[in-house]
Length: 123
Image (cartoon, one colour):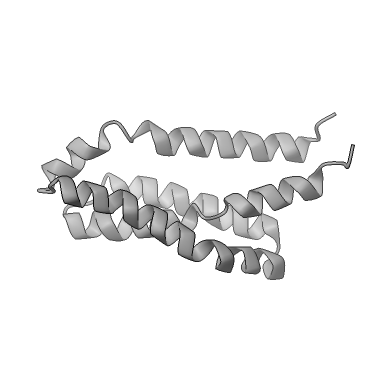
């Protein structure tokens, strides 16, 4: 039987993933309206992934020190803020900085996995 904590975590992660991927089809058109070219669109994806890759070990160590729930909550709040600020960007530079912030706050996937392992039984 799956506990309520596991269900809540999986539901939140599913909603967060749906929210962040729902904007992907229209994002290149939005970025081009800000004056970006193909390189800038590629740079957005690279900055997101690179910042996520760099900060995952640090986020993991923070979760060991301050608790997994706290770090997950900060990550979810960061994702929500970056999604809201995305619609308010007025220039390409803001958008690129926002992608770095979004990548950092999305680096909680290993923390979610570790938290799920703590919540589930060995069965």
